[in-house]
Length: 392
Image (cartoon, rainbow, N blue to C red):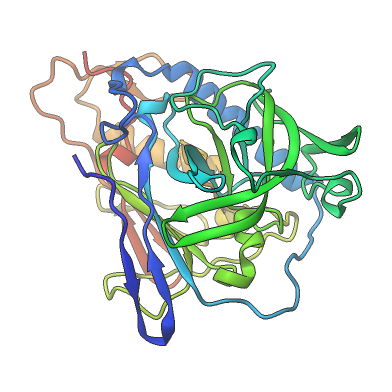
């Protein structure tokens, strides 16, 4: 088990570096639960995943392009927080733990989401709440907490088509409805947020949810990393310069990181592929250009136009990668051919190629590789090819 780790590093040019872990919400490294992956509700996860994809496709088709954070000088500091897979919180999304409030910040664990500009957490008093592993944040315990007034420009423009704002007395309220019909509503507010002991964000705009329902597992809420100016990336542009990166843990028992800011330190092992802007959306990150796909070392015969006509976005909250039908069909045919000696079983939710391997002594899973523009080749790990429903 990897323990919580905070690193403080000073690089040339005065760039500061500190670390936050990325955990799996159901992983053994998370201190609040000891959930087994086999206890997950896979139907709920996969149905929710499809709902998320439907919502993303709807947003891209209906939203217009808006450039945020134009002009001004951008900072060069850097902060890194540990990131993990969220199995202990009944989710297969990735989580980080931050502090909120002044003096003695409350520790809250959030799903970090590159597809959302909204940051919110459950708050007391709660008229409706879902189960949360950690204590729910109580604004009355923070002297730096303040509700956002109706006169604030943030109240008149939420920055996202899926978020509505309104006035209740003198304070600004919000409501967001996700693609799976999960809901969070409450007050817009500001408070001090702590990434590490030396990295503090003052007057951070977030949503304090007093009415929350849906498929959020047992986390406190969500950390929005999207391109919109209201996300944590946009709000910290002066400090971190609109840069962030993350390294996802390779398993639910390992630890990754989420970093804000840019540094001259680049590991030689890293390779890069260009990411283009999605003109139909000011929120999502993309586009990545897939050049070719291989199965068991054999290049699939997929016309280049298949990928050039379909944008591919990067979304940390989507569990299952989606491909254009022609590309997916080619992968499925080749994969089934390589796995012909194993027992096929009926489909499970959105997964249409399933096997019963529980009585099999050894399983050889054919390798699947993606080549992206710039010559970047990614050989998928077995855990990125097969989704295990049960080990029994």
